[in-house]
Amino acid sequence: MYIDSHCHLNLLAEEPGGIEAMVNEATEQGIQHILCIAIDKKTTSDVKKIADTYPQVTASVGIHPNVEQEEQYTVEALVAEATHPKVIAIGETGLDYFRSEGDLEWQRDRFRIHIEAAKQTRKPLIIHTREARDDTMDILEAEQAEEAGGIIHCFTENWETAKRALDIGFYISLSGIVTFKSAKELQEVAKKLPLDRILIETDSPYLAPVPHRGKTNRPVFVKHVAEFLAELRGESVEDIARITTENFQRLFPSTLALTS
Image (cartoon, rainbow, N blue to C red; front, side, top):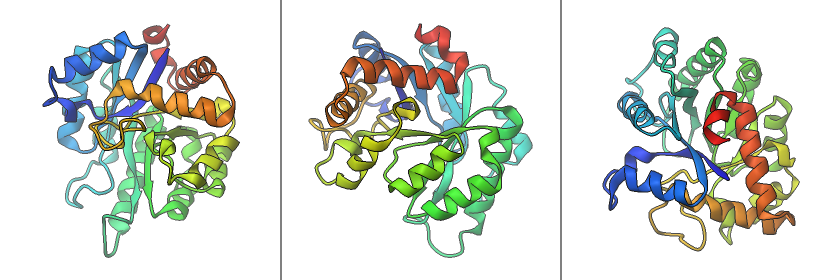
């Protein structure tokens, strides 16, 4: 049993068979649960509809850091979005200094709004960070994000950043990037992570793992991330699958019935 802890099913609608084919394929191959992630107001609506359609799919609500500055939620509006019964997380949110330029205080303000909404709803955060590791962790710590908990998704940072995330109770989610030959530093971090704090994801349709690198990613490919991690860490694939599933259920206990 596997869980894809982060994907964008709405972006797979144009694939052969559409979203239904993606979900059915995953279920048939042992992926028992999929967390579908919002990146803006439109996809917040889209992912809730997808989650309503498929019992094995849940959703997050939020605005990605690279979405234009003008698109914003208040804390109250984000809390209201999160009342949907299939919404289990807030985000993806965070900081991205790679794609955005100039004075990015608006990005940091947006991040703080998401953290506050997560604390009020007691729904964990889905964190995106790129070329902003120190500011991301500084804000999480300053805003006491440990009250909500969460995931550093698609983790590509160093061990120091991983340790800071672990110290505030966050989980580390590894994507297909960990399978890339160029990801040597990340692989060393992945070896050191405590097994009870690791999650696996696809971030589909992006970042397909080896042996599908360069192709459209899909939830079923999360098995390749598990297989690579098992070999890297000297664990069995069965243990990686079981423990990452248990980790997800610990963070999101409402999904336990869906994955049992």
